[in-house]
Image (cartoon, rainbow, N blue to C red; front, side, top):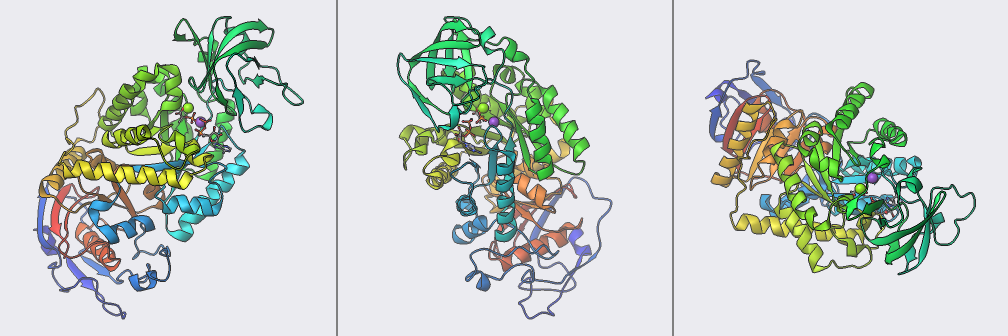
Length: 579
Ligand SMILES: Nc1ncnc2c1ncn2[C@@H]1O[C@H](COP(=O)(O)OP(=O)(O)O)[C@@H](O)[C@H]1O
Ligand SMILES: C=C(OP(=O)(O)O)C(=O)O
Ligand SMILES: [K+]
Ligand SMILES: [Mg+2]
C-alpha cells in the first residue's frame, strides 16, 4: 500500500492536544482501514516527510473560544481551514445528513441592502447574493458588494456575488418615482417612447425601445411582466400607443413588456437588438473590476454571445475565474439550449420572462428539461422567479408555492433563487427560511425513501472530455450510496472534480477542499458541496491527515466516520474511517 511510504511527523510542541488521537510518528497508522482503488499513479508524488505543526487551533478558534464568539475568526495561514459558520453549526448539531444540499440565492434590493440585513440572510443560509443591474445605480451595487465582502472577511461566510445584466429586451420606464401603479379594467393607458422632461402625464408609461410604436399594430395584445397585467392596442398616434386594460393589475417600475398577435409572441425588430447592450458592457466592466463571482446574462439567444463574453473576460481579467451563467428566458434560448449550456458555466431557468414568451403551461416541462441538460453537461442550474411570490406581502407562503419549491428540490436543481421576495418584499428572512426548511424536508424524504439518483446520466452530443475524472466521480458517488458513507472528500484546485461529484447527487454531503477563496465561493452555487478553503499538497495521505485533524479539532467530524476521498492530483478512490 502506497501509504507505507509516508512518514507523518506530529509536533506536540504547543500546549494543545495532539492532532490525532494515537499518533505514531513513523508510520501511517493514523488512517485505519484504508482501501484504495488506483487507476493511475501520480508521477510527481510529493514529499515523504510532511510536518504538520499545528492542530488548527492557531488559525481557528477552538470550540471553547467559539462559545463566546458567535463566528469563527478567519485567519488564512497554512494550517487553518475556512468553512461557512452556518454549515459548521449544522454539522456539529445534527451531523452530516442534516446539511442542506440545495443552494439558495437572494436578490438584494432596498429590503436587504444594509449590512445587518445582509448578515441576517447569510446566517439564514444565503449562498449567493444576486444584484440585478436593471435596478439601482452602480454606486448602490458597489456598496452592496463591499458589504457582502466585509461580511465574508469578518464573519467567515463565503457568500458569492452574482451580477445579472439588464439585457436589451423591451421594458417600461420608472413610473416617475412611484413604487407601483394600479391599472384598472377598461382604463386607457398611453405607452410612449417619448422622453418626458417633467412628470409623466397620468396613465402614461414610458417604453425603453425606440421601435416600439412602429412594431406594434392595432389589435395586438400587450403583456406586462408576462401577463400579470394585459392591454389591447387600440390606437397609434406617432410615438404614442393607446391601449385598453383587459386584465387589471399592479404595474411595477421597469417591468418587462411583450406583445402578441394572433396568439403568438411578436418578435420583429426587437429580435435584432444585441443580447448584451452597450449599457450591459459597462455593467460587465463594473462587475469585472469589482471581482464578482458570477455574471448572469439575460435573454441569451445563442452560444456565440456566451463564448464572446468568456473571451472578453479572459482578456480583461486574465487570472479571474468569473463564471458566466446563461439565463434561459426566451424561445431562442430553448431552441439552442444544449449549445448555450455547453458554452456557459451554468444556467438559470428564468421563469419570469420565460413565462412571457411561451405559454405558461409549457414552463414546468421546460424547467425539467433544462435541469436535465445542465446535469448531463455538468453545469449548475438555478430555478428562479415567483417561487414564493406571495411572501412579498404575506409572512406565510401559499400551499402551491411550497409545492413548487418542493418540485424544484426534487428535480435536484443546484440552486433556488428569491427575486422580489428578498429584494423588496416585507419578509425576506422568512422567505429564505421557507426555502431552507422545504429543501431540507424534501431532501430528507428522498433519502429516507432511498431513492438514489442514478449516477449514470444519458450522454448527449458533446459531453466533456475528461472521461477518467467522470468515471472516478461516478464510481465514488455510487460507492458512497452503497456503503452509506458519511461524507465524500474531494481535494480540488479548479473545482472540476467537485462539480463532477455534485453532478451525481449522492446521498451524503461532499466536502470540497480547495486552495483559493474565489473557487470556494464559486462552489457555493453547486448542489451538495460544502466548500472549504485549506492549503494542501500533492501528497494525499498528508492532506487527509491534515484535514482530519483540523476538522476533528473543530468538532466537524469524529473518529469512526466513514469517508470516501478523491482528488485532482491522484486518480484514485480511497475509502477510510476517520482515525
Ligand atoms: N437594486 C434594486 N433597487 C431597487 N429595487 C430593486 C433592486 N433590485 C430589485 N428591486 C426590486 O425588486 C423587484 C424584483 O426583482 P427582480 O426580479 O430581480 O427584478 P425584475 O422584476 O425587474 O425582473 C424589482 O421589480 C424591483 O422592484
Ligand atoms: C430571473 C429572471 O430575470 P429578471 O428577474 O432579471 O427579469 C426571470 O425573468 O425570471
Ligand atoms: K436582469
Ligand atoms: Mg428575466
